[in-house]
Length: 289
Length: 315
Image (cartoon, rainbow over all chains, first blue to last red; front, side, top):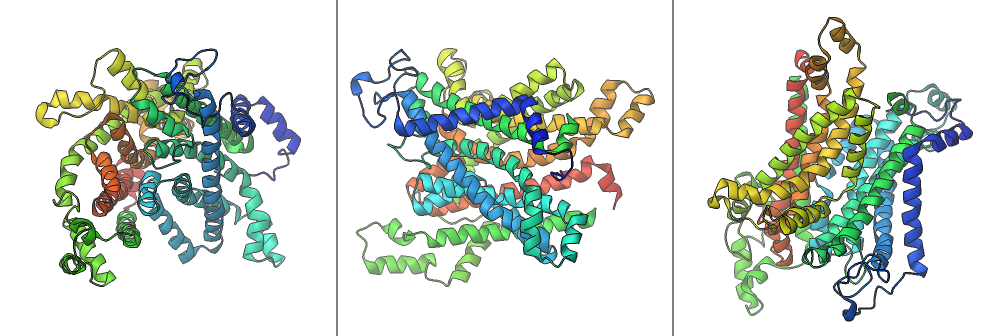
């Protein structure tokens, strides 16, 4: 997959025009902005206080007072989903940050140096890939105990080889190009060429991958909290809400339905956004459609 | 070709050795003394010291690693601290639940995804394709454990067709045992099938644009034959790659799904072991699953040679 943002047709206006004509990009962006907005609003306002337990109101079905019903402690599900969005976004975002921050320099370095360095870095990549995020989370939890931070680290570690691979593949495609040769002739060093020419040219690639990993991070965080390895109560998290819902499926199915829908909609939005971005920014995938 | 396979084999072995070092190192830095854990808080320091010597815990680090790693090779993982039985016995009991579950899910996901991919690719851009890929887009976004809860609600609580959880054991008859694996397998398979279906579709579309497909059509072969025999075979490489990656996710997924359905598999065992700080069990299961992931990816590399005659010819 090569990407060229330096083609003459790829003006900012052109990209914008394409963006507004791309349905999955628009829907994905709308959903993503909505979820981010919900998470931000939850800092200032939620319909009910999620830390107050009102046993008299426990496991109430959805109503005008509680749109999504209440849980076994009488907490408002909608409010908890709003606060849970913060946790999901924060965990996934930081995990993507860790993956990009470490993976991209590694990948770019491997591509620039080649040879033994490249081979060695790719073998380390294979090693990390052999540990699914859940397994590294289990090991990290075994050492440090459960918590949101450890979930972030586990998902982040899994993101590193992903970004290293994407950055390496992207950089390898750019290095043989003429403008790189020109830069080298001008006496620029490896690091400067990477920062000034390689990274800007693989930025779109990284953006698309970042969106995908963001979505995967939200799924992974939900899975980890569900098995008790993520955010700890009383901090509301979507995965934890589903865990609490499990034993009460018969009496309070809404406790499971709504947090699950929140996850599905968020991940769907991010995936649509990623697909749309790939279509808009990558000439090759556009041709393929 | 042989050179390629030998290289992959060496890399896989190297990865396995490095992975074992990582797992060993992680367990080394853990707080807690295995001997103290086994004897309880009332044991004297002398007693603990004697047991530490017996267990070889006082040996130098490198020796302990070699002893542990050598044990792994002969499937001797040591003894569980809490159950006081060999870890391999615990694993053997549980793997007969986890492995069939992962395999059924993998088979199910493939059986669903390939026809959907072929269907979509052959109707690219038309309504059927749009609907199928819309469904796939949704499927990718569904967390398998939530899907599992919804399946339990629908088929176990509401329709009462299958048990909501638990596992009667293979001794209860194959059909009875399989029945309790149906929902977990479906829950694991559908989200994976959505990913695989998307990959199969785009791989097929790429292949269908090749010259040899036009040639095959031009010499009068029916579209169906070209699609299923010529195109699908050539689209298998990306599909197999994803299948290999998915097996890793499926194994990790079984850990979570087993907890949803209360299945007595490796996943349940690892969580019990964590709460009981039975580290040797945690260590062994992690190592087993990592080995499985590495092995599967190696098999995928080998299968390229079977699927793609071009690779075989390069011998």
